[in-house]
Amino acid sequence: MKKIENKNLFLDKIKPVLRKSKFSTINMDDMARHMDISKVTLYKYFSSKDEIIEMFVDHCIAFLQNADVQLQDEGLSWGKRFHMLYIQSLQCVLYMPDILLEDLKSVYPVLYDRLVTAELERHRNLRRFYEAGVEKNVFHPVNSTLSVVQDDLMLRQLVEPSFAVRHDFSLKQALFEFYKMKKYQLFVPDMLDSVDDAEMEELLLQTIQKISY
Image (cartoon, rainbow, N blue to C red; front, side):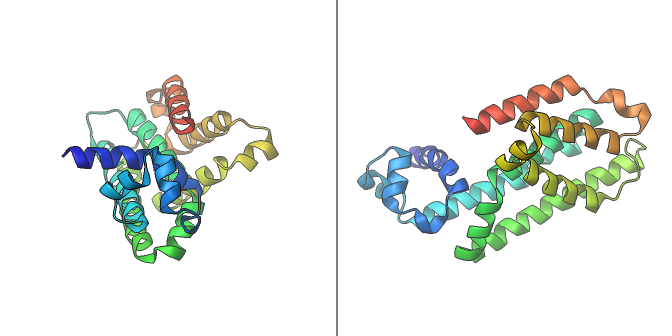
């Protein structure tokens, strides 16, 4: 049990590096340095770089599989569940950026296919959420597939540093403005009061700070 806990702690240290670096450019010396351990200690816990990459992908898949559990909780308001959906979609983009997906597809195609399968299942769950909102007269009758695609495409654009430079937006401003667009796009007028903008602003700030850290 202690070994598993340590492996997870070491993996947490390397995750930010794996998200923004090409796998082919990282060797075990780099892994040990970023984990802040000796190479001897590294090999006590991990047999190879491939094992580390596979464990990293397993963590990404687990996040995708568990991300939307609360969306089905009818004890929560539609506004709170919408907040959760937005933050989870943002986290998916930040945890699994385009550079990671492209490199994974090229170097580890089997792991890439597993990750894509988990992502598609999450998208199915999101579509069910949107469709349930329409059935309950909470959401406008929007196309659920296009809503899911819009979330992913837009968020990937907004988190790119070049977007803030080109359009004179801070990351938080851009994400909050898109959130408001989604809110008015989705919720029927009588349900808009169920969505707390101040709460969403705080959630965004916490998420950005956590990722930056």
